[in-house]
Length: 495
Ligand code: BES
Ligand code: MN
Ligand code: ZN
Image (cartoon, rainbow, N blue to C red; front, side, top):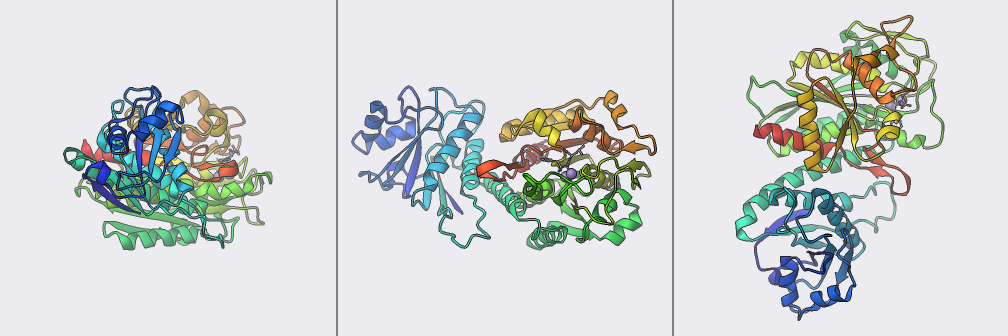
């Protein structure tokens, strides 16, 4: 997709379609009024007739208009005639993008730049336009013979008067970096497990490193992990024919002595559960168990594109979890890199077995903070559904920063307690700790397990089991939590 900021008068703006807002009291937005006055009042006429109610996300496409350089105008409802909330603006943008997807439109101009928003600025506005149009345009057609269903959207124009052009340009740059990070994440996530193996993810990381001089890549092989004593991580990979990889992506944008932000992403390229085999229905979705890892790649790509003045290290432990003669068995006892022993009571709780050794490995980077992202527990879906990601951590300030970033990015988090009392559920009769804590509070006990390996730094854990992909008819990766993470990094870069 190509992007442009255009300051020409709206009636002279050349595109296949201009998007403008209307309110539910039938008031036209300022941009809609301008177009209305150049089209003999046709917009006011259809709105007053009630062809569009102006409710958030309603759309109406007007075609073959005369008097404008663009022949189509898409009206989109913005709800009540008052500053629009971030959530409603996103809803309107998604609806606009979906309704344009069906028609033969290659170039779209957003004339929503001057819409008054609730506590949000023009930069945010443009960023959301870029993100949401890209989000809707994305289609995974790599393995479809018929590619004619692909989105034809090639060009996105942001209409902005001269005085807003600077803010619009910043928003556009940020939106583009986030959208491309999200797209990379979605593409990797939607790839099937027979293509997207740990080796494939490692190769993608190497390719990303070649594209950006500020990114350096290091891949640890199983022999290297053995030397480091990563008995927990390696035990999962033993049940698979694909070798595990521990991928490090090092972004150096900050000063030499500034401590790095470490991002760890679970990269399970297929989770069958191991010997504690999962039931068949929906098991295909466990190709998405690498979404945390993919989000680390997408976020580091965005950081490099934006040349953020920060040091960031991405770590992706990647493996499959399959049943095999050499796989973990219930009752097995592992020795982690930290020295703590783990009793495997359920081989399907494998994510924490990868993450614990990666957390210990993160100590060597002397991190400012460590944030891990993992499709860790089905229990998170039960607790929170598919709206926010779960958040747990050992540092209130870090958690607050992440929540704030999520609220701005429209990529929300909800914090759960990580209280000492829950640790009791992880007691083992035979080892230092059990890898599962029973059926109560599964998301919390999973985080309690990780917390034992994160005592040496400020740490937060994002459980993205409910948010990393959509299920059902519209099955597909979402790219979350890349928008939230990039927002967090942008905030850090500013302070
Ligand atoms: N990858 C799954 C978690 C998951 C399940 C994410 C369903 C999204 C949808 C994880 O490895 C897992 O299997 N967790 C177990 C933990 C249990 C054995 C304590 C779970 O959630 O069932
Ligand atoms: Mn599992
Ligand atoms: Zn898993």
